[in-house]
Image 1 (cartoon, one colour):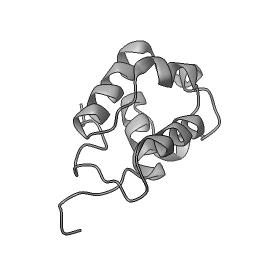
Image 2: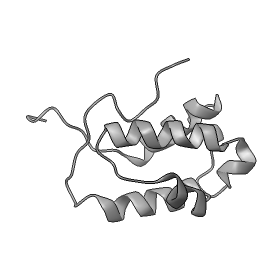
Image 3: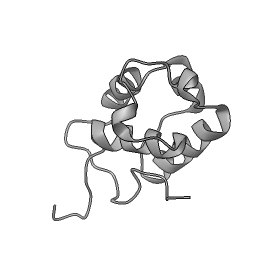
Image 4: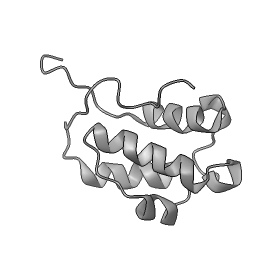
Length: 96
């Protein structure tokens, strides 16, 4: 894309969560409660911080109230106008 941005896709969101949990994206079902998969408050804060830097305004409280990846994606879709884009490289946490 000419402006150097890319959209945050469902796959990118899943990959970010999987990286934080130390899992493969295929091991993260869209409808399972992420807390039961090991997503604690510290990891959630890392996700939110990463996505804030990318321009996505979601809060820890909002995400904690919506316990599945599918619900997070639904929330995300209400925040960015169609065609909105995030800075590349900010869709995933760095490898640790």
